[in-house]
Image (tube, rainbow, N blue to C red; front, side, top):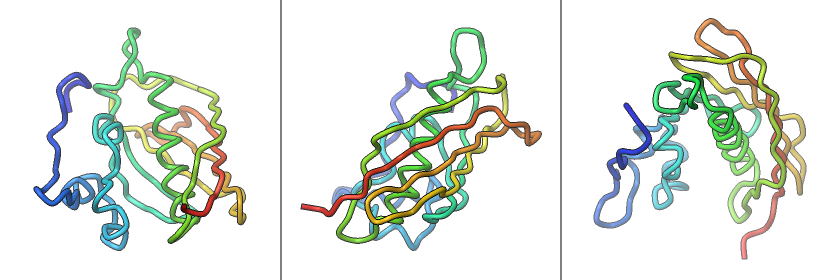
Length: 161
């Protein structure tokens, strides 16, 4: 990915199946039947987010700094929040399970240091997994393991329909 202005290639078959998009984003095959018609979302694709682990308790993904920078040449603060919300929302959705869905109701972040290159890793860890709320702490680190930012996301768990 070189920039965020070039449209991403849609990995969608004529039937609306986004399995190729899910595979490219690192989504484990056990979630493909659930997500095959939704995919991971256009913003996740544009930001270059790739999952390496997915569960309600812990979800991990990487995102490149390149293409996601602000005018000073470092990773945009909003990009940190996009990664955090993506990880927390997927983890909460997995926790919600079939017939339910997660709705983000609060996200906040503290930025500790900048990153000008490489990959950022985000790790969402469950703080609370309840019947109506799921709360995750998301820590973003650079390739040297240094903490770049810390976020917290709260999702409301609702029944479909």
